[in-house]
Image (cartoon, rainbow, N blue to C red):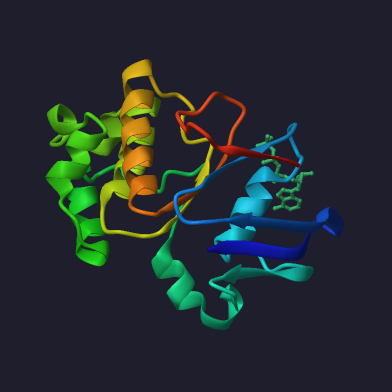
Length: 196
Ligand SMILES: Nc1ncnc2c1ncn2[C@@H]1O[C@H](COP(=O)(O)OP(=O)(O)OP(=O)(O)O)[C@@H](O)[C@H]1O
């Protein structure tokens, strides 16, 4: 289970939020909602262990994630605004690289986001939505229980949103947790809303 206790984050000398306590149990999805600048991306980065809290703690199974950041990195998949895609690699090569680190099958991950026909093209020639689909396809590699997704459907067409929905449903059926920041409707039935 993921939890925060009295979490406060400061950025640029300003407190973005404070006193934030939340809980996500196996199979649950939380939607982080709020206007621009409310702190949704900031919260996701803090949950990923990429930002140090000014106060409070992020807990996994009751342990502070800061006590073992390597273990937290292994259990977490963080999808930020930057896709971190190398232009010279093909989608197949990109996913093969991540599969060596995380396990899983690159061809299955390509198929999960409808990228099989584009697998041999250099990533520099992918469209914005296709690049986002490749970043999302990495979620299909290995088995990490905590998915933290920042605007995951930005730029996706309807069919790709449906494919992502299937990936999210399978993850939750395995007991995985999803926290997603969004301004768009997401394919996450029964998600709990957290207003920032
Ligand atoms: N690197 C940074 N340095 C200083 N302040 C920052 C930094 N990144 C974000 N902030 C500030 O933190 C606050 C929260 O930003 P954040 O990106 O978390 O908002 P958000 O809710 O995700 O917004 P959006 O809906 O626009 O994506 C904003 O006021 C922003 O100006």
